[in-house]
Image (tube, rainbow, N blue to C red; front, side, top):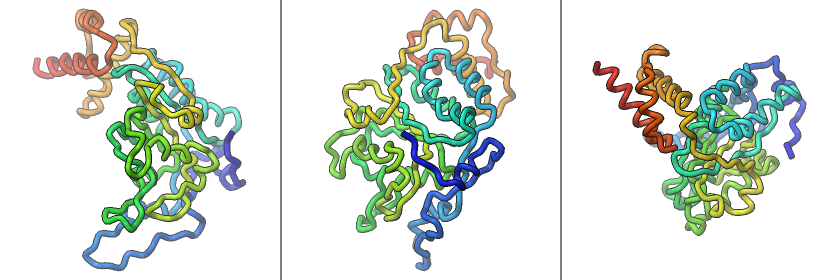
Amino acid sequence: DYPERNDDEIVAASPGNDFVHIRVLPEHYQLPEHKRKNVTDPYASVRRLEHPVLLHTPRDIRSGIHAAEQTCPHALQAIEAMARADLKRLEWGTMSSAQPVLLVGPPGSGKSSVARFYYQTLGYEVMTMNVGAMADSLSLTGTHQTFGDAKPSVIVECMAMTGMANPCIILDEVDKPPKDGRHGSVQDALLPLFDMREAQTFRDFFLNVAVDTSHIRWVLTANDLSKVTEPLKSRCTIIHMNRPGTEHVPALALNILRQMERDRNLCAGWFTLDGVEMELLKQHFSGDMRVLRRMVELLGDHQVKH
């Protein structure tokens, strides 16, 4: 079920408005004023939320979906699941909340990569967190100000840093954090964030105020579904991803090359792969995207040197 929106949000999120801004803190709420000189403002990382932030409304949605399908042909079901909320905007004319997507598959199958590519292609800001080593839930809930190193939650900080009410947050290895952390388990802390109505009034322990996190696009990754709690699974669309096959190598390898070009500020098409190089990649491909990336990067580095 999707939460009801007030009239202002419905009008603001219509397809004709590409730059919609909404408040995620209560109306007229201001964070405590910082008056102590030579002391870091504890609210500095989230002060941007005192003002309305962007509710991103993607343009050319179908073109973006097509680009993701062409680039990640082994992950069509994952793309379909992530695209549902964006496609509903085309059908209904308003932005809707998105059900969290849980991608389950073996290491190296490209789970977080496909999520990152899809959302970046549609213009969303993306933050990735590996929660596998997260000992407790404080990073997600914020720390009470009685703690010596108190700070807001990384979720609220992400919204402030990106200036976006609906960034994509990817949580990797959600099946691996301990379930008996000193300050609560990560999986339990996610439950109110994934309930669309509770998420509208998410209470950050540091800020001690309701924050509307219901617009966030969530993607979780896991290797072992049996280690994810039933309440968390019930709040997600679960997609099983297999490792890509040899037939997917050309599209995946070319995408890696394009990413290398962007990372190195090179023109698109600077790197190429000839038929011999592509056949070598196919012959040595084991289904692990990480290994494929290393092989493609080696070929690219060889081209730079020669």
